[in-house]
Length: 212
Image (cartoon, rainbow, N blue to C red):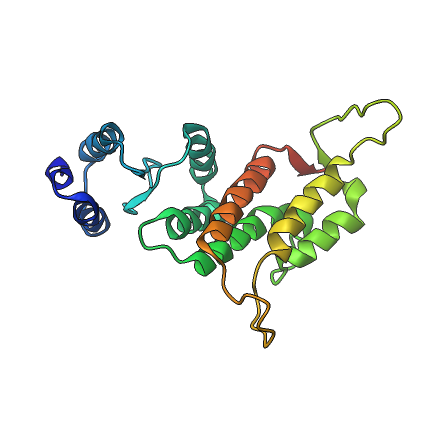
């Protein structure tokens, strides 16, 4: 497949992306293509997270890529939503609003079992209220030591704030107010997906958990 990269700029990348989406590309070819893209200095890369061929995505730092791969590798509904969100936010055919929706659904899937496991219709907003109203039922594996004279940060409250940032920034409903956006920008979607991956990793690793 490396022959595609000998084309001119966008045409070559479009060809590579099409083949990845439509063809069954073996692992060796994927690794070789990943290396070729890297050596050519393209801003696009082939993610090797072990999932289905999803085309090219924007190049990010190795640390961020590894963190997202860890979340996806955990499996389950949350992982699948993160995979879809990443492709829609960082791929060559972005859909920012859909990406943000998958980011929210990913966090809902990861958070529900430790907040409202018996409520099949619970939204992230309801889960956030549960975390805040029952803060003592949850724990964050950090022990802040504030400067002298300052109050320590409440870990559960802080985690709830990050959850609320994702939820309250989500454009979920239409509006007749022209000053309010009804769709997300690509930048907002990418930030939401990264934040969602961070929150889910904290849940998957037990950094945020329900007290035993």
